[in-house]
Image 1 (cartoon, rainbow, N blue to C red):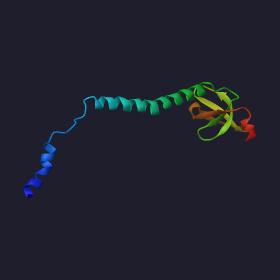
Image 2: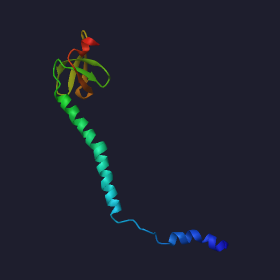
Image 3: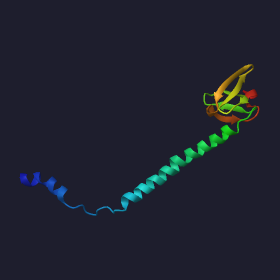
Image 4: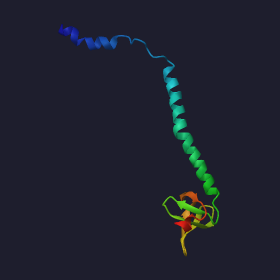
Length: 112
């Protein structure tokens, strides 16, 4: 009896699997995973990057912007890589264009 119990796990491993998986199961799962990954991660991220690129390229003098540091101000000068933002009277800060996260409606700075 003890011999039969000790060889039971070996016999279970040696037995052929009932209902072996289809050879198409793995490729179908990989395609489904890639599709879900593309829809939920890659596509929205590229869409946000494109919108940010359009925002950066459309910056001009007089726009009111919000930076990633939370500083709001009015653009006074725009160069290729940098902008100057007036945050208070006679206070101008320089930022990289990529630091701008949003443009604000005209008059927002005065209402703050």
